[in-house]
Image (tube, rainbow, N blue to C red; front, side, top):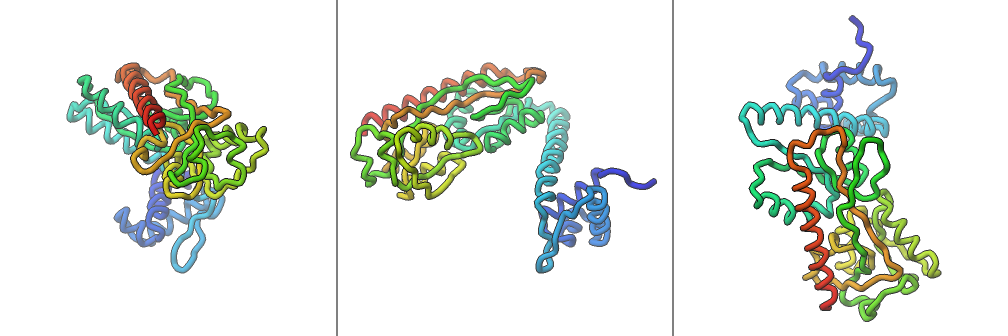
Length: 310
């Protein structure tokens, strides 16, 4: 019977080539011959209707369309791996595993203390935490690959619940030797011409900053854009420039010569807990959410106290 659509074996071969960069490597990874992988690749490209790779110095370089296909393929294989892991847990009668999608900065700052408190309450479930950009966190939740997500700039999607975790006010962040460190409050006009580390445009953070600065007449001299806000703070500590960031991003850098100053006009960031309405809550979502909210409040208060003391 002729093949009319992509099958699992095609995606498996495609994924192996993407991971190894060669047909030979893909064959070794899958335990099949090089000619077999070549045939599968030829079938995959024919069925897809577009080329997937270009040959450059003996290696297969994926096209832009192949990259897009690979992202979706990874979601499929992640789902298969999750099902396999679930089957193994059911065989062993292991506790439920909860999958959380989180912004990288919150994975580093908020979740350690939140998870510790939640575990201390006697929870037996295990956690699997996936750090992603905000859009990818939403994707994990809407594709049912995560039970709960923490994101910002969440779009309105039918069936997706989004509850406010916390709203934070951002600081002007710089190293101790910066000229603006002498000020008690940094105003938008003070940023004119200063080397600036921009935040994620995908999540809308930089747009909030630019809106705050727009009426002041200041021109930001953007030197770097850093999607991970904690990374922007690390750049500021190293003297690359100044940035605008909140308590979650600065918490890990308070003992590294970091200077925080109130910024006017105020810039605030919202973080939301998201989940699908149709997914049954069999793991105590409310208890986990409360642990996160409590940890968030404690962290913000700690950073505020540290800033006031400097």
